[in-house]
Length: 187
Image 1 (spheres, rainbow, N blue to C red):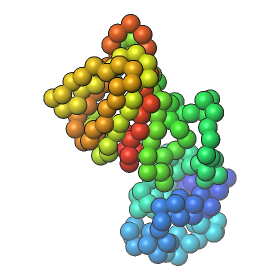
Image 2: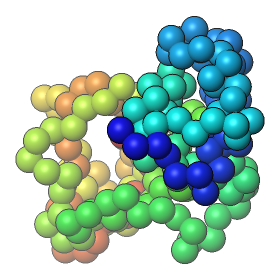
Image 3: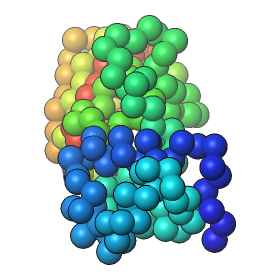
Image 4: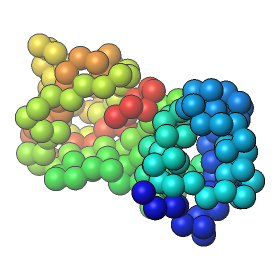
């Protein structure tokens, strides 16, 4: 596989994500089977790894290649976010606006959710390793968790173990808005 382009400032980025994960160079080397000297050379900008070698190193952190290249240490230290700074991750009538551009190194995901009339998260139930909760701000949403189902309106809330299969479906005459959180951010 080809080498990663030189202009991506790979070394400082690798050092930042490794540090964010709380790993020393030696600990990362031990987890991945990549020599400590190789990690040191990459971080110092003296070696440009192949994409496959970088992927192997990142699996020890763990962080996906796409999230690694999107990671911006300075930007993620932000404390305040304007509405236009939220990152859209939803589709098909479901708007999921996430605080921050990446969740790497964070213990929680916070979303501003909006479900257009008739929108839902899909017929297939979702499950992932986390806990999640939210409060309905506007409209009505049918929440299904395992074999339990309830329609929630403004002021109503939910909190559940996300390993249980779940689904969200807008019901009623207006768009539904929810503020939610998921920890760890595995959604």
